[in-house]
Amino acid sequence: MPFANEFLTFLAALNTPDRIQTNPLREGLAARPLPEPCTVVIFGASGDLTFRKLIPALYNIAADGELPAGLTVVGFARRPKTDESFREELETAARKFSRQTVQDEVWNSFEQNIFYHQSEFGDADGFRRLAERLDQIDAERPTRGNRLFYLAVAPDQFGLILEQLKAVGLNKAKPGSWARVVVEKPFGVDLPTAEALNAEVSATFEEKDTYRIDHFLGKETAQNIMVLRFANAIFEPLWNHRYIDNVQITASEPLGVEGRGPYYESSGALRDMVQNHLLQLLCLVAMEPPTDLAADSVRDEKVKVIRSLRPLVGEDVATHVVRGQYSAGAINGKNVVGYREEDRVSPTSMTETYVAMKILIDNWRWEGVPFYVRVGKRLPKAGTEIAITFKRAPAVLFNNVIGEPSENVLVIRIQPDEGVSLRMQCKIPGPALRIEPVKMDFHYGTSFGKASPEAYERLLLDAMAGDATLFARRDEVEGAWRFIDPIEEAWHGKGPQPGLAFYPAGSWGPKEADELLAQDGHTWRRL
Ligand code: BG6
Image (spheres, helix red, strand yellow):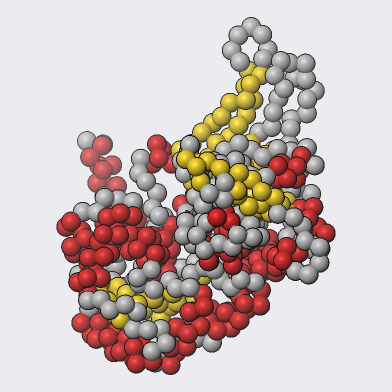
């Protein structure tokens, strides 16, 4: 019975000591640290972020069975509430915003881990009571004394909360435990404010315990950029100025400012989206392969890209950057007001709701390759994508053929309809030699048959695991501001200011953005 013998040999091989320790089903996960039990303290527990993102994310982690045992949530906010009323509010929010339907059974057990702590952020006694309450939680629940402080508040509250945490010693972990802080965006409004905030944070928590959120990094498709580039041998040899003609990064939203007028007035699209999310995507496309996947190895490579961005100063701003603002128009057949008519927005506002820019990276790999970046609100369609256009094949063989050969374009769709497509030339079947572009298309939905987790799920798990790879490091954030500040300065400073270009809501942005590309003989890709 040779087969039986082989089978027994196979079983014996499985029983060798090093095999016993490896669970083949966990292959690939072993390299990632596991999320550890802890108490997540959310400052700003009555806020939008908690309701729309954090609690739905924690619920989904629980529903997927990945929540570390003993995980406890303490919501910290000003309004008086009981644990019960807080849980009820969160349940309503989770039912509305969760990506998976909320199951009564899972919710009922999950909510038992949620508590409410009422205090003003400026109230020292409220923080003293918080420290006592966390000690009590650690004594009663298997949290192992680990604490994750999540600052889901307006940035002007960060400093105050950090001070208070320090005053009661909550910034220091007990022996064998950890204390980490998660800081939401916006991380400053320019370089000096980001530096000041970094100084405040580092006076309270060490850099290794500081997790600066850029939720785009938590998106499954953003994480796939590195895999696509470095786990496939076919792309890397072509990934440079010899073969790539231009790169376009687009983030388009039909939404307006959605009641965030005051925040948006002080921010604008450049600070809200380009300084963080879009520059992060650009770094993932442009970076060199890291030496390994350790958080600092990856972040070192991203910082090098940021340092190589050609600065846009003075007159370059007018020639390389277009700022736009939406006027009244229609989205999906519905009339919408212009930005200046939005709630709590100045009727003479110069805030940009659209930015298009041409960025050059001064290094060997990207010499002369334009990276066109555009982002806008009230555009016709929701979509974030990266389009890498390769140089044309020499037209020596097919230049007389019907149908002009077009370029190969690799499109990484970050959202929605997450996936990757490659456009290439094909012969149309038939006796005549006719060429037409066709698309090879991969969709996450159909290939993996399950929805991707929300960015916040991954980021919360990583913060619990102590893996900072998908969080922005201090020098990345400061480097990004160093690049952005001169543009803001040219727009809002004393010198002659480049104009603001208006576009009707529901259009693809101002004509000036088309002209920006037309100068180089390019056009924006249609989403
Ligand atoms: C946020 C911006 O960081 O990102 C918003 O403040 C923007 O203005 C949002 O709408 C876009 O994120 P997502 O994940 O919905 O594409």
